Image (cartoon, rainbow, N blue to C red; front, top):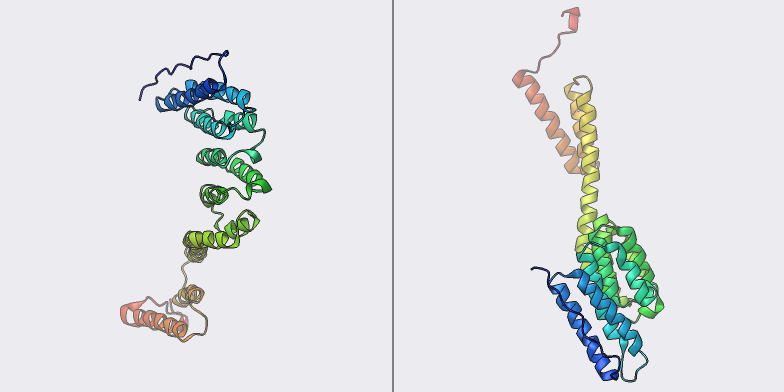
Length: 273
């Protein structure tokens, strides 16, 4: 969709508060339209003008600046992300709210997703820790959503699955039932990752033994059987019936190949070559 100019609303400073509030609505609509038409500079401009108008109206009765401020800030963050000026996001948010810990959850969610997409995980961790540790945010209905976004978009990509339960314990805005539900929701993913990591370690150990066997001088049948036995005992509990039977089958198979198929045996007896 092509960029389209969205003109700023005409302001009349001689009029009363009702018209000023109507102008705020126009700024909000203008910023939304500019974002839709991919005119990101105009979107940010509308947001900045609108936020300056909010400050002038903040002391009026029957007016809550929170809704307008949050919506304009969210639109501005989206515009910065779209025009790839992500480095300006945090300064903009801090200019509006003073610091991250007092920012609304919707703004923090957007920032976390932005930095996760950029794979700037240290920044994600800093933002999440600052906001989640603020006691004022413990009662925010969106608190679990912030936790979930950080876990799925910042911890899982870094393979920190095993640290998730400990992280949830530090999130004091979650009650016991919420923590248990999250653990259940993440259980499959965590178990799959831990199992995958364990299999990778075992496979690496097996490959090491095979490489050590292959890189040396040619070894005899009994040496090869010993190597196979070591690998087998890593997989099966030692001294179990299945382990003993498996090793016996391997030995019999090699003996059968040696005497029936004709392994070449060096005639060292009697000093003959």
